[in-house]
Image (tube, rainbow, N blue to C red):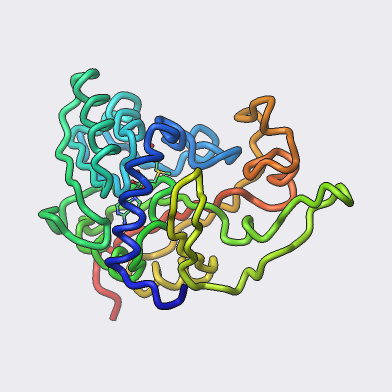
Length: 263
Ligand SMILES: C[S@@+](CC[C@H](N)C(=O)[O-])C[C@H]1O[C@@H](n2cnc3c(N)ncnc32)[C@H](O)[C@@H]1O
């Protein structure tokens, strides 16, 4: 699948996300950073947002935007998602709550009209990894942030997928290579076709550094059993408590746009 091109990836994934959107409704939204992962309530990564401007890349059903308005007092919300179904969910949720927001239907590796040097905070909660072009997306993030602005994203820990539960021996085995970085077509992800971009942790971190943002904090999440439901105890489940005790489900990165040029 190494030869999958951007347009093909976006077309497959847009169709897929339009179909699976209802399954993810409110599923991975702030203060939660990821499945069975440490939350914002414990980490306190988000700066004071009183009256500030916020953008979310891959805003899904809009629950993180609602949190940033209702619980963190941000006063200007912008959101972007490439799925019509997800943008409709966001519009509906925010309208019901009377929260104003500027929303774009667009892939996050394009700028559909977002201002530069404008935002105090940009977040992307379990969405950044979907971009077909990580470097360009991060260059856009850098351009949208004000000097001193903060970018926070969470994504599945790249090593997590390598573990598979082998019921025959009742153990996890390290099955797939952590090193492979090609976009992989999964024909039956949640019963839809989807392309998943496998990238290493170092690829994310180096891309942040190359974008000109300064890394402030990297969290490899502890298992958070407070978020676990009965079914999350089953070892063969993708996000399961026993698996999250061997490998973090999620990594979280906080980075800042420098206030002055490095000489
Ligand atoms: C796991 S969901 C994020 C959930 C979100 N945090 C929420 O609270 O609903 C991932 C989101 O990324 C979006 N997405 C996937 N690829 C994208 C792309 N290339 N550009 C913009 N959004 C994308 C999907 O439509 C989906 O809404």
